Every structure is written in structure tokens, then in C-alpha cells.
Length: 121
Image 1 (cartoon, rainbow, N blue to C red):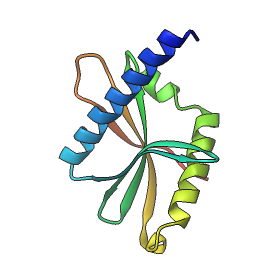
Image 2: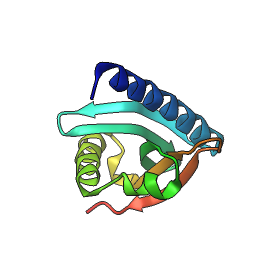
Image 3: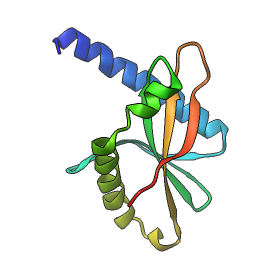
Image 4: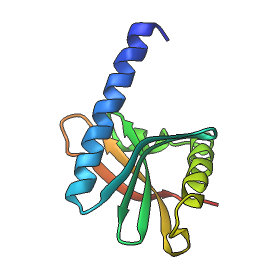
């Protein structure tokens, strides 16, 4: 991928994550981390409401179906391993419920929040 295309994709991703975070805040979530990086992978957003922690993948795609399809098995595995590392560092980890969500950034629409887009193993 050429450098300019990579920069454009990076900016689009940043903007999408910002919109996703705003949409989740309006639904009562607190954003705990953005672009949380571990040696095993990156989590776009970590959001919490009560004892539920949503590990959120943000995808900007033309349709909801394409956004959901973009979270394949390899991505799920990477996200799940990174989430395990994050959860292990939380002092109240025993009482937290972990969920894997998707926020789809679609053209000319409010971000679509899909809960439990995949089940962690």
C-alpha cells in the first residue's frame, strides 16, 4: 500500500474511532482506552458501563455486512488475546463481564453498535 493511501486509511480509522467513542458515550459507556496496544495486538476501544466491559472493534465500511465480515477469525483471535492481557491487569477483573462488540462506521449514518459480534473462547 502506498504511503499516501496508508495515511488516508490511518486518518479515516482515527476519525471512525472518534465517532464510535462519541456514540458509545451517548449510550452511557465510559471509554477506558483507545488504541490499546499489546504485544499480541491492538484493541480499538475499551468501553465500560457498570460491570460490563466492551472490547470494541471499529470498522468503517460501506455496509454493516461488510463491517461485520471484516472481523474475521484472525482478528477475533488477536483481539481476544489482547483483551485477556488487559483484563488481567484490572484489579476488579473477577467481577467484570467481557463482551466483544463492533461499531460500524457507515456512510452518512450514525455509527451502528453491534453487541456480541463474536464470542470469546
